[in-house]
Amino acid sequence: MTKKSSKSAAANAGGSSAAPARAKPGKSKAAPLIVEDVHSALSPAEASVGQRTDAAHEGGEFNQLVNHHYLTEAQFGIVAETLQRNLSTSICLYLKFKKYHWDIRGRFFRDLHLAYDDFIDEIFPSIDEQAERLVALGGSPKNAPSDLDKYSVVRVPTETVRDARTQVADLVADLSRVGKGYRDDSGTVDDAKDHSTSDMYNGYAATIDKIRWMLQAMMDDEQLN
Image 1 (cartoon, one colour):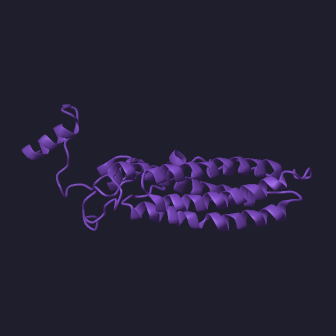
Image 2 (spheres, rainbow, N blue to C red):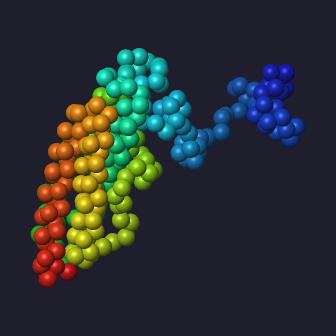
Image 3 (cartoon, rainbow, N blue to C red):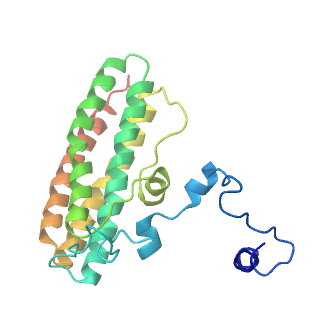
């Protein structure tokens, strides 16, 4: 073992004398990268700015001109939190509607099966719009499954729900929470001087309120089961 490789082995073992020496280049193949290594590895964004959805300070190629435009760091932080949360929520709401679209059974199958897709068509554009708004302000959206679970206020069911009333009641509860969230966030980002994002949220709130009303109206039917 060379003096250089001895130092490297000791450093990797934290000073432990029991650590094996690192093999010389060309003598053996590197250990294969296992799945756990990939999942636990930090992305470039996480390595440079931690858990923030902020791309303005990463540096590197193609990133020199990224900034927060007319927002201060504090204002961006406020706006970015709402955009990331609402982006994750919108994706999960889309997935939840799809899950119920596939699972519905009974006399209201056709009505809800088709209605859910109609509602999805109204919600879906907001996903890209919110992500691109975050990017335009110097952010970097997080959309891995673990990120969706962390930020979303809507939970995608893991079990199969066939009953129409159970599905509709669950969606009405979610839409009530999401609609209120957009209304509150509209005021929050407006106070942070981001009037454009505030206007976006007002439009999304109106769409969510309409879908909620339509689903809630179905619950007045005693035969919905």
